[in-house]
Length: 331
Image (cartoon, rainbow, N blue to C red):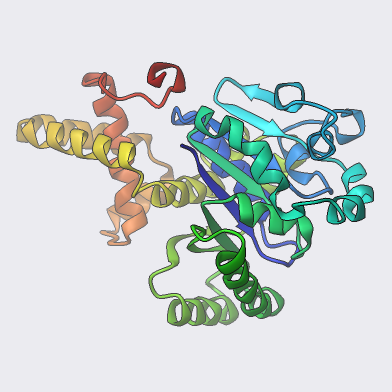
């Protein structure tokens, strides 16, 4: 069954859409079957994937109103990446949806029949705690708070947490608080450093070690309807989102087994073979990461980047045939 993850905070401009889009894109590139769900009537996630919201007639609204079926609405951007689009038209029906029976369960009921068709379902939430955000939380197995190091997003955490506790108690007993991701970071500023310390204090086991730095390529990628991995795979933004997603899926059983497999393969090689593979892996890294490694950096994200490149080389030498993320092979 898919992991259903909401990226949420009731504040705009914190990077929820950018995070949802690039997380979905990275997972799809790794072979996972991913459904991205645009729950914001602004349709920014839909636009981020290159679709013109002015030209879309069949959107998630048609599913809410029972006017269309899922296969008629879903957009297949690639074999592994599908999208439930949204447009501003949905905003005009918010009151209608709010008055409907079982209004908090509409999205859950839409996703239930296809829950086994995907590995991950990622939901981009609107910047408020209205009926669309409630639907996202009720349909989710977990959620991630997306926080930029500013005053207002920090103030939004407490009321959101109260909403989460209400949803977990009354509407979705299995909902889990997965973690907190910091975006738009510039740790040269004292304010960003202070916000990081506050989050570390309040969420010591929930704050991701990975964080997303300010990077113009992320904005440029969204403006041309591409993920950062399509637009500029060597950019700091691509590096940061790779690190975040790898940290996010670290406890996912298929990923954990695959890493163990390649760690075992690497240890079975001779010293000369291991050094050669690490040499080639370093060459595939960005200059930023190579410089960090040359400086004997000990940050976990830097070391993980080298291991990821090492495993990609090992995968070419020792294909992990008994493992596949394809849903076709599981059926």
